[in-house]
Length: 68
Image (cartoon, rainbow, N blue to C red):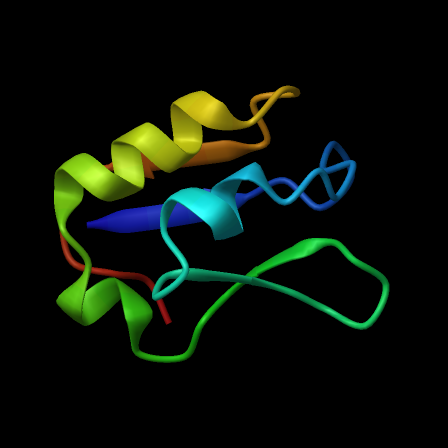
């Protein structure tokens, strides 16, 4: 699974963190970031729900191996 966060669009609402805390975290400025290794154990449905919960749709999810 590939997860991308558009850091220019993210407003730091934290909905992704609340929905999938093992995958998403907030940086020191409050913006979303991926938890290291979180995509390897993430449940696809939970990640999709987190992407849908983003009020500005800053998260994109695609099938396939994670990009490093």
